[in-house]
Image (cartoon, helix red, strand yellow):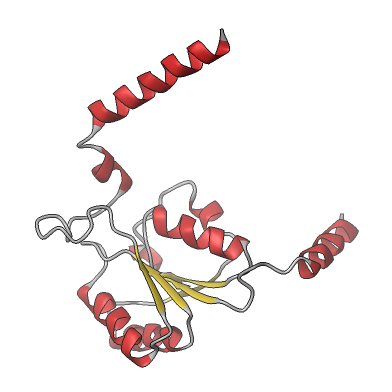
Length: 171
């Protein structure tokens, strides 16, 4: 088994990802952000996941371990001055930042990301939001269940249509 791990590592070193050399800082929460950065890491990006410790919104989600595969992580108290300085330092050296500017993410984190684009003009900012910038909804928590809840009829009709389609195709 040890030899298999060495062979796998050698194969991975030979197959450089298309994103080798790209540094990504993941300050997101929920599912969409971690899944996005998982795919970036799968393609060779150096992803640093900023963990919030006990305050991590997705801490109870079963997929969290899978979504954080291939990433390095650092636990930062984003509400403290020292933590905000640490995040700013990470963003100075980053190529990409992925964050979720919703009600769960603090205004301080949003301000740090905005300031980082001035200090680091090549920084690509990926903002993932369940409600967009709509003035009535942009500060709402964009957890998956909350975003999907208003549309159960649409979802059930869509699923029913898929079931009908698959039944027609299998005949």
